[in-house]
View 1: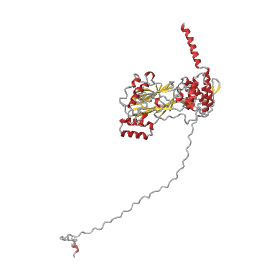
View 2: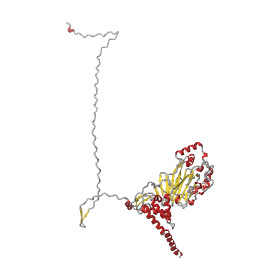
View 3: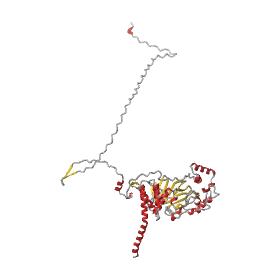
View 4: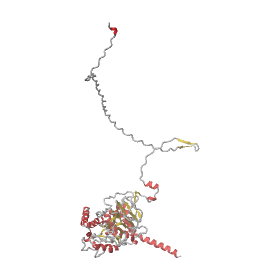
Length: 529
């Protein structure tokens, strides 16, 4: 019997909680934001207002109904400044501490806020948000940066390449509730065709932009992947190669005006570089350090960073964002005894040092990053690496009027439909295709045939035969004029001269040889007398 009484009570509590979530103040705030943004754009404005409301509740944003591949923050950048000022004034009138108005105020302020950036590159070297630089020779998985509200977190995995050097081989991110991982090596499954995993599933990007459920995007250009948060933050990853191992150069861009605070290897983003190591005496600038705040000349400093400082930001399995093969965990990639030996610039000979410095200067490496570049190039022959280039997708984009809403999702842009692509029938897909005028066909008229049973005249159906279009007659080509044929004269053989042999002469008698007697003809006896 108690169960029958508890069920109505639970239903009443759930109903009251849902009503409280949709209080009149919240409903009015969404309607007011929608009305203001609709005056700017009838299609994009309502989508942006609904996206702000969804982000305030950690829910998935609505589908895009316009051709641009923008996040809510990027779309807010295209709103005119007068409209943004009215929205900001609206958010200040918030006596009930409405979450939607708080989210709206953060988004409007983030558009005018200057971002700050940090990075981790090479073997690896870290640059904090406030400009502090240090070498972080460790092996394991660490929190690179994390916002206090939990909407932003970036974790990195460092793997040894040699006994004394390590590289970034993977990165994992919480993008407003979507888990995005990029692996340069040590893939968590047998799919080696793509380095990207979204919520544990392989992602093969067929286009340049992929939409995340909660408003973020992933953009790909060659081997570079840029992840954009719906609130304006971004992470740039570049896949590089050193020896026989692929690694990552990572750049992080945050907007400090819209968050309470940050923590992690990238520092706290408060404008001071001297407290990015939690105020440690050893971690600060050491007078005996020949490279000052560069952090590559002091082995004592490197030992502190690889031991005490690293353990403060090592992750545990409970808060890991990475994917793992069966039987592996974050402890599989952890080695607290690394590195065995610390190296500094004094261990390099002058010839190697000069060669590395020349290579870095030829690539235009800045003066503050030159020591890290020399270190990488001299020890691991890593090519000089410049700062990552963060591009704003909205720059140079002109918003054209959208007459009718359309569907713009990970399957492309198409006319609007209420069903996703995999649920649409073949007939519905044909309706979404643009209507093309059909050519008119003429049906030949046939004589009526009398039906002997019904005694009526009916028309015999004749299949329509479309006339075969005749190919256009080719234009006659001009007949070339015949060229006169020159006949070569047949050579007449010259008569050969007849050579008459000379008459033969009697040969002279040889010496000491008497001439032969000439015989006389016989005389007849009858002739005498």
